[in-house]
Length: 400
Image 1 (cartoon, rainbow, N blue to C red):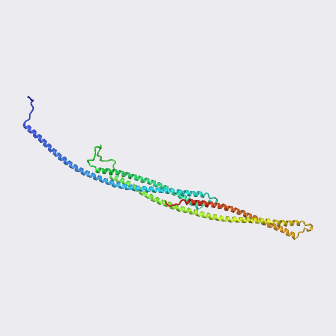
Image 2 (cartoon, rainbow, N blue to C red):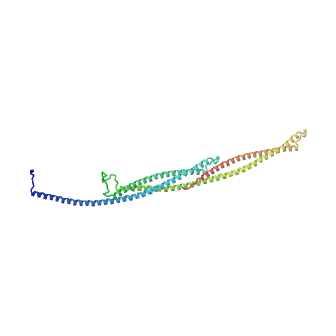
Image 3 (cartoon, helix red, strand yellow):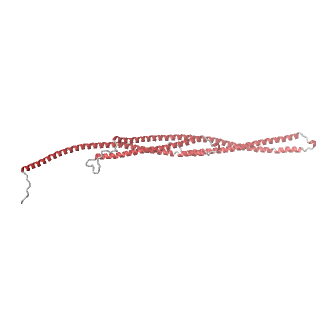
């Protein structure tokens, strides 16, 4: 069979080519071994550095976790204290509200007493010490009500500040809990657990809005300081309110006793005067009866003179009928004339006595009516004041 001729190498070239191939292979093997050894050293060094870095990172993460936890615990403690103080202040506000509520009844009683006392009659409608003390009591009650309303407004405002401070603490605690959890998770993560395939940009070296550690701590410290200031303000407000309520009740008790004493003194004075008027009325009525009997006696005495007068006048008339010279003015005539004159004088005196007695009787009647009116008016005043005192017994001022 015939074949086309191909170029052939010489044995020398053949050996040379084989030696070159083996030399190249050995060179590649040497280079490869050197590269492997270098890569191995690099990997070992990188692993060692990475382990050191990761150890440092875990250490810093743990330190950061501890710092966050420590500050969070402080925040939680302060938040608890603020919560407790908020409850205390809220309870104090309720006590103040109750103290305000119970002032309605004494004020109502005070104003009712003033209204009742305005129903006194005539001279008894006097601006006395009771009126003055009732006015002072009313003003004091209204001033206390106004102070208590202001105190409630102060409580509401302070409660708002406490709750705002508590809200800020709670937000800070919540953020720190989240950060604490994240740092704890990061500290526990290992390279085999990390999944970066889901992250478009897994490396975040800088955060534009991030705070530095000093700012971070200062933020929480300011929250704590604000909360403590509000807690202290609340405690001071509560202490002041307790003192104010005690003082209010003390002053009210004093004024109530003064007003009650004024009532008792006035009732005693009016009662004494009324009793004197009643005694005078009894005497007046007795004198009226006696004067009435005296008038009757005078009328009888006047009536008793009618017979003798008629007799004497009749004798004079008959003797005037004596004839001629027998009509003499003798001693009998003179005695009869004198008798008539004496009887008329006696009758005139008796009539004057009767007129005087009747005038005295009329004056006694007027006095009787005045005394009766005065007794009625004073009895009305006493009844009104007793009504006030009975009404006032429905409420006694006591510290709340």
